[in-house]
Image (cartoon, rainbow, N blue to C red; front, side, top):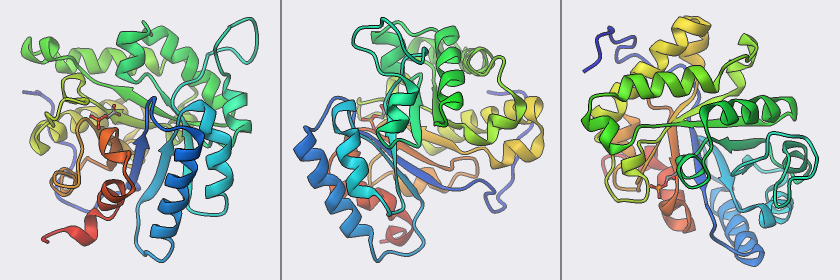
Length: 269
Ligand code: PGA
């Protein structure tokens, strides 16, 4: 579908591997603490794990931060407001998320784009604010089903990348994780096939190389999100440009999240 040449062969991936769990509006503080303790305990003696990030709802951030402190599990907020403070009833700033223990924040999730009207321009301001607050953004992009059917994937993703990353200092690209989440695959049980996902990941990496240089592009973590499960993670991860996953539904139980995190040891089982 894409006219550019594939930038990567089958060689070793350069970027680090990251598995992130987006809990959305699930789990009370108590449930979040139990989950985080179980996760920490289950992974304590495991070697060769990817980087792990969990994104509980705002109310549970501080409590989960205490539970995972000193472990290799990192904490993400699911959203922030673009201002540092002010009269924005119901909103949370990047500085507040940072103080609650977050190292990361999800920006531009398709549910924020479609249900809460977030534009590329607003997402760009949130990315700038997150970076200034010391948070590493997980920047989500993805096309809808009609956009895919109209063959507009490349155009849509490029616009999201270009406008979302507008005015960013080139050096900060190393702090941004990009998550490709086709909207039609989120929460629907319809995963993009590994080949479909790879095609868009390759496009994202090529675009990044054009803007930030080949080395920066090779190191950019590009996550796939949309109905990732313990059953399909290995096939997705076998693709050269998939550096991990942003997991919704299957991140809500410790067992399935751990199976995804441990995809390497489950290969061929
Ligand atoms: P899903 O959600 O895994 O439930 O499809 C992914 C996401 O929205 O990040």
